[in-house]
Length: 192
Image (cartoon, rainbow, N blue to C red; front, side):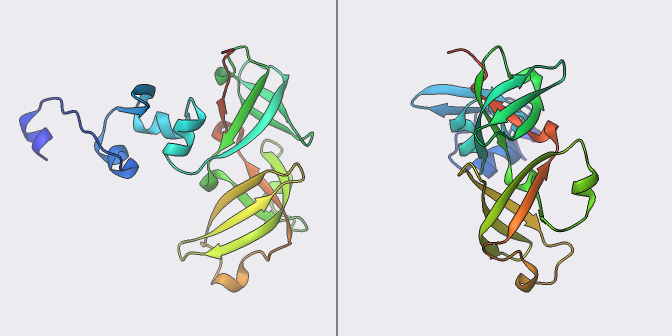
């Protein structure tokens, strides 16, 4: 309120990521006295440039991969288990080995045997995995999913169509994870 009343630039220093995201037009994420990334809150969250920024501004699922095919708008990345996922080409910058990331709330989880729109959505990225843990936290259920390649992914599934913890996927259940390629960010896309 004070900043809006006086209309001048403020520099606000905080370790509270949520506070920084809600109060700032631009954020500089710093590490060891150096700027890791500078940009709008949405840009830093949706397109973190480094593993540090991805982890600093919330939970990120990161998967190692190699570029299998470069396209104009989307490129294909082959993960360690052989799965192909598509990512925005803009973040690749000439590198062959990268990490692809996706935020937990961007992932959708369905049982392998369910016949739903994940089966018919040919545009979505897909991974299979096994539920290691399901924690009902009211507004959502937090899942820990292990992929065949050994990666562990966190998923936040909103409890929109469920009526409690009894409807959560059980430990040991095989599931399919899907997400839109444009929700994938790339880390390590430069030849450093």
